[in-house]
Length: 154
Image (spheres, rainbow, N blue to C red):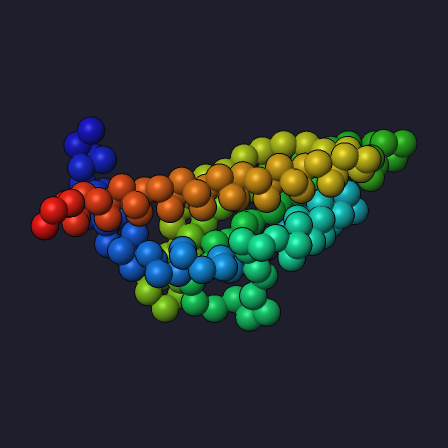
């Protein structure tokens, strides 16, 4: 509880700083740390899903405010010649980043999973859906603090 209270001023500052950016189309940087073929397919599908989205876009130059989605993968059966390139293990980390306003990115969430080659599209949709959920939660937090800072009737 005490640590949460200490973080409140930092959270308020960040939410107020990014309020304008969260109301328009949202930039998402996808960082590819894949080391296997199925992992590369996963990252490609995630990027394609963001390109198809009306809410998100992939900036050509990663600079300024953006959500960063870091995807790291490795072959699930690495070293087994009969089962290589069938499945991947992946880790996704979501960060809020702005190299103009602060030095370090802000950690938002993470997940681990695995995906077979035949269901990479479903895993990509899950990652994009989780990104949407994180952005929505941040937006709700901004609205909540906005009401707190500007009470009705004043």
